[in-house]
Image 1 (cartoon, each protein chain N blue to C red):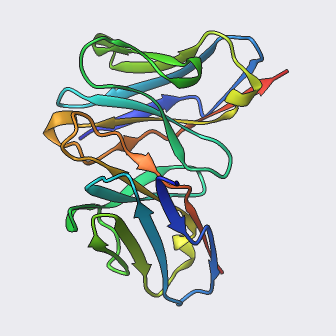
Image 2 (cartoon, chains in turn orange, blue; image 1 turned 90 degrees about the horizontal axis):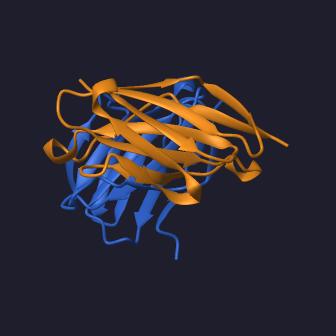
Image 3 (cartoon, rainbow over the protein chains, first blue to last red; image 1 turned 120 degrees about the vertical axis):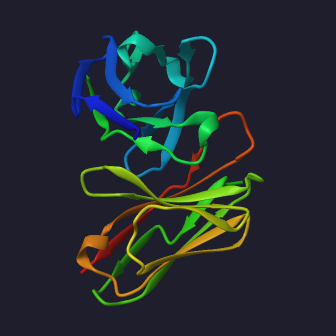
Length: 115
Length: 114
């Protein structure tokens, strides 16, 4: 069965500092991996996704993530945090071409950005 | 020009009541979903419909009954509401035949059962 573990339910950084949100996955088939962001009282918005091909994927708002099969990780990074990045971030996995219908989410990481 | 819309945005009701949440998407997608987000922000899939056919039912109590009148709509009816049903319910949609499962989410419906 697939699962996602997000290390750290809360991450705090200063504005301009590096953002690193950790995600590890478990999957018996090649996974599709996603990062979603949820701003307060809003729905989820896709930040970026990995399906096949290049393991470093770039998303919106300056975020990127690297798929590392050997480490079963898909950590999200941003070189310089902005106050507007404060939100809840969710990592998710699906079974890709084997079953594209089901997303399994991690428990989320709340990012706080201090001035 | 909202892509995935839900009504109502907020729903406050008493235990034992029956309520419905509606979802509509105008993206031309053929697959729709309901997710439940609990008070700890944990998101879990409940149902998925493809072309009006139920394809995922994740051990949800049968008090929850999804209905898909057409590909653009997926409604969620909940009978005999319980305190534990209080949560935010998100609708989402995707195109099943695409090369990846990018799901687009609605703004959510916050259900409070008193």
